[in-house]
Every structure is written in C-alpha cells, then in structure tokens.
Length: 156
Image (cartoon, rainbow, N blue to C red):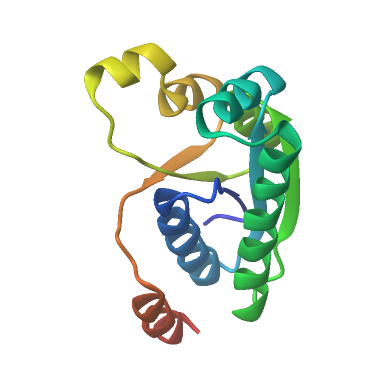
C-alpha cells in the first residue's frame, strides 16, 4: 500500500503520537520511513526565542536534540529511518520534502488550538492538503509507548 512514508516530527506531544502511529503503519506496510523535523525559519525562531528566552542557536540545538532522540527511538525499535532536518516554514518544507522523496503518505500530528490561534498562524494541514500529491494522515490516536510495543508485536 504505502512504500515511502514521511513522518513529520516536531518534538511535541502530538508529534510523538504521530511518530508512533506512523511507525506502526510503516511496519504494517513494510514502508521506508523518512523522518523529518523542520526548524522554523530564522524569523519564526527569533520570535520564539524572544518569547521563551535563549538564543537562536539554543533553539536550533533543542530541535536537533529532540530529532536525534526520535531517530534513536525508531532505530531501537528496528526501523531504519532516513533522517532529514531542514530549516524553513514547516508546511512548505513538509510539502517540498514529500515531493522530493515521492512520498505515498505524510503523517503529521494534530494539536488542538482555538479559532483565533488557527486564523492567526494558518493551518499546516490545510496547506498540505492543497500542495501535497499524496495521502495525509493527521495522527490523533493516543498511542503510549507500551501500546506501541504491544501493537508492534501484532504486526511483525
């Protein structure tokens, strides 16, 4: 069914859920996994660091550390993810990488936000649905590590 799955991971709780759900689907399909993390472009990162504290370098290093942990998590579970860390707008970067790797499926997490927040920052999922030529899974299944391990045993 799916041969190339792009897992978009941002280090958030929702990103971890998407990582687990996408990994289970990849295992079931025998698909190649491309694990993507997008460091927001310099403007967004600067705004982030101004609100939270720290420097842009600290912010980027934090993304890199979270990404390394995700790669290690997948590797420890028998996956051979192809890691890809890019800088840019998350929605545009996910779309570009999906096209670049000829993804059959893009898996993203979903964080619930209020209406004003959605309007103000735009919607990654809406952009993806208009600009990606493959299926998109918006992972909402709250799979714990323990449930992942049990489910993985069922798919092997």
